[in-house]
Image (cartoon, rainbow, N blue to C red; front, side):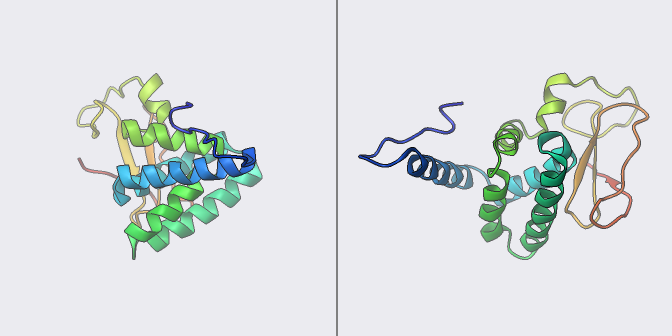
Length: 165
């Protein structure tokens, strides 16, 4: 991971200053490397995993803040994507998840331990993986097992819809 988060040694700066410089360079590098829509997709896709990545109270707060940023991005995705990335990078667990998602275009848990769903007509770039999204565009969920209950969007309390390829 040291290649992703290099620590800079600049004169007599404190480690805290070095980490802040490194963090800002990391955010700027990701913003320059990925399109705003890719960063937004990472933000929508991480939401179902927040309770696994953060403690319960942190996950709730993080999700509320992220949901607000995603809503703002509907109007101005380019400017808001940098704020979204800062939020996603604010915790080590969410930062690692985001880097892996942006690299693979899938949640890390799916890419590594994935077994295809054995149903005809499934939809995804990975055979058998079915992707669902909120009609309002702020939440994405991947069905990982046959018979897994499709949740409602936690923001709008509406059923998720199957995403067509």
